[in-house]
Image (cartoon, rainbow, N blue to C red; front, side):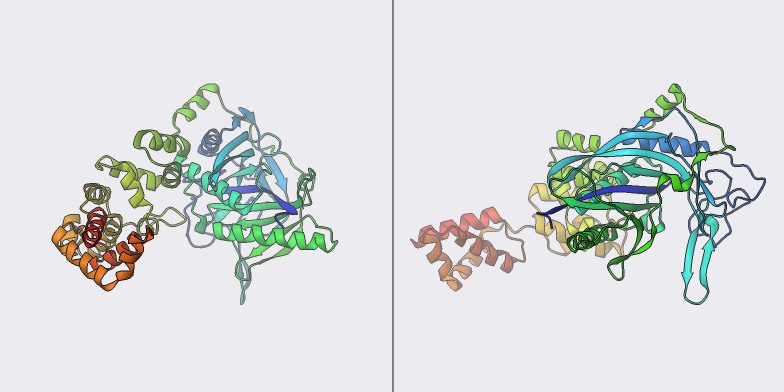
Amino acid sequence: MAEKYEMVIGLEVHVELKTKSKIFCGCSTEFGAAPNTQCCPVCMGFPGTLPVLNKTVVDYAVKAGLATNCAITQLGRQDRKNYFYPDLPKAYQISQYDLPLCKEGFIDVLVQGSQKRIGITRIHIEEDAGKLIHDANDGTLIDYNRCGVPLIEIVSEPDIRSADEAIAYLKKLRSILLYTDVSDCKMNEGSFRCDVNLSVRKQGEREFGTRTEMKNLNSFAFIKNAIEHESKRQVKAIERGEEIVQETRRWDAAKGESYSMRTKEDAHDYRYFPDPDLAPIRITDEHLRGLQSQLPILPDERKRQYIEQYGLSSDAAEQITAQKQLADFFDESAKLSKSPVGLSNLMMTDVFRSSYGEDDDMVFGLKSDDMAEISNELEAGTLNPSLAKKAMTCLLEARATDSDVKVKTVIEAQDLKVMKDETCLLDHTREILEEKPMIVKDYLGGKEKAIGAFMGQMMKRTQGKADPEIAEMLFKKYISELS
């Protein structure tokens, strides 16, 4: 498939903004309330009610646009997007059509070591719809709490050519939004969800194929699987001589397949027109400058600082800055660490990374000064990378019963220090080479890999504690005496 066809992907990302109240009324946006307890005549669209735009929604949307290199529309409006569906009580959604708040942006992503720029067509504000709950016994129920929760929709250019590029784009976009603090981007709560527009075409062709849209994907794993499955489905259909139908499809994660929901609508099907109840949106130069000044240091700039200031590799800096909490933790630890590079390596271990979920919930039990101390012990040679990783694990276990236990206490109690005693290591060396004479024979025969075999045996005997430089020196010394 990769040799004959290529994917063309555009993504529509819906992001719930973290305002306290809804976009056009004073109802709470708090997640998890009892069904239909956070709605009023305005967000339910009762006759005679009038919406009033939440100013913070505009500010947050503009911040998102500035952070993604967009041009800002300083005189815009809101439009009615008409369609009939049970979760939309007004039978129209207030959105934006031809004058989105933000347009013509981009973000740069790193995919398998190569940088790629992915364009952003537009970012516009709109209200969320309600939530349908399908119950086997009671049928379909509707919770209108989500009606009127403020959204921004971020529409990419069709610049994405693989599932890996799509995931890299989404992770970078989510990271930027978390840095700007306009959304909590909790995918498990639907605060960051994605529609995938995908078509395939033969390699070298310039015309796009017919696209399908897969709706409301809220997991990176689901998105990746859905893209790979849908692209294969389309290729197989084309190879059989079938035409691809422009349609909306639903991804069934349990079955690992998609199915058709309805024929895909075009813009004219929604009968957009300016909302007569809402005034134009005007953003002054002064207000725009104020919003720009409120932006924090974003992931790309932070990455550049880590490379220049601390000497981190591009890959390590990319991984650390991808999550704001992780970067903040690194900054605090780096103030006390003698080796920020060693610290970054510690933070790349599975022990540390497993403490951060997809939604950036930090459940790590160690503090920044703990990490700095372990990093300093590593730099001093008291620990090696394997022992440092074990020290983190042991410290986490100890913290479960004693929140005040110290790093050095754990190192001492678990005997985690690097073994530097030459007499003891020499005894191990003799025993290993007497038991494994082939190592001596291979080394004397010019096979440098024999050193690796010896070190493997040494680490096994010492539970990973032997100082590798001393052990290698003793190995060579002992063999030279034999010869």
